[in-house]
Length: 260
Image (cartoon, rainbow, N blue to C red):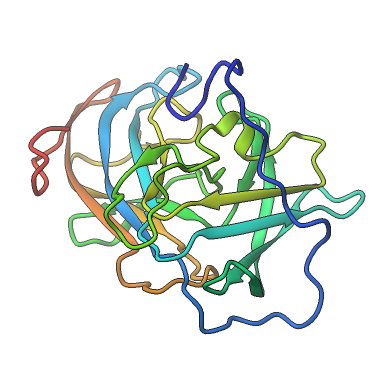
């Protein structure tokens, strides 16, 4: 088994979206909403990339975005006949669990690459490599995500779900022929993408040596409705060195984390 994905022998049924896309006027009611927070990148290494391209250097890393609550993040995707992408909608619920509103929130797309093979929500997070002055140097091509509760982050927060359902990427995000999917990030849980998955790296072939920051940014386009947008970014300082085909990375301690 891989992190967040089993060999298929312990699959649970996928979450069920609504029978049809929402109708009526979209609205964002005054009810509890999710709070997406990014954790600093970790597992940071230099590699030659997923395709072992000669002369290329990549900076690979793992990243997690979690939900501090007090409400779930619930997103349904619906695909019209003949369309390659799904339209995505975020739902809102009252204290009794009744749906009381929704808003359009981007799209979902099918990712056919090994290690993925599921529907990705396109407005969840983004990764950037920033220069020492915090200006962007490289943006990762990874811009879409399958939402799953792969890791318990903080179950002391209000309304934390100690027994999340969709913990396995193998079932959380639909099949290629799906016409609708539901993706959920429970309160207290996070969605981790590890460094061995396709797209989880920056091309640093032409990036000069020096000090940089890996930025993990939740809800980059601010399309998702949250309780707080000020805690969506996390930075991890790194120092690039070495020479072409032999690049190095040093990762200083960060808060209580004294190693990569």
